[in-house]
Image 1 (cartoon, rainbow, N blue to C red):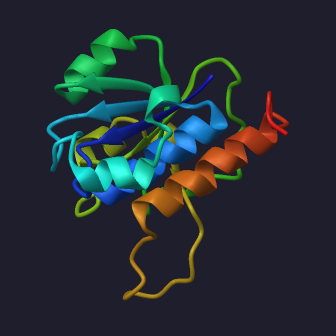
Image 2 (image 1 turned 180 degrees about the vertical axis):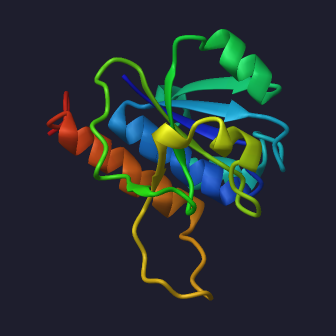
Length: 156
């Protein structure tokens, strides 16, 4: 099973779009607080359309709580600072977790430093002004690479 993990997301529309992607791909969405918005906000609901009832959504108050409740999770950390491309990794088919950080700061450096071997990046041109992609776009790119490697299970 594929798990998408958002660490302290800040923009409701991004989270709504990601929820929609997770629902459409059968991925579990994990939200780690604090969130920069209420999950009940209309922007989140509108972006997720009518997919909320088919979404497997899980919430945690902190990164520590997430780790405690998912102690055996194999986590890949999406960051612009990684050496390995997201498409260079071979993802496990059993409970693969992909974590994305908040829009303004990404995943904290201490978490990345403790998990260098599972940090991944999406290749981009080397421009200082193009620092990163939109969060919901990044999630879609990585989710579909993982699903491609799985040969798109239960999808048509």
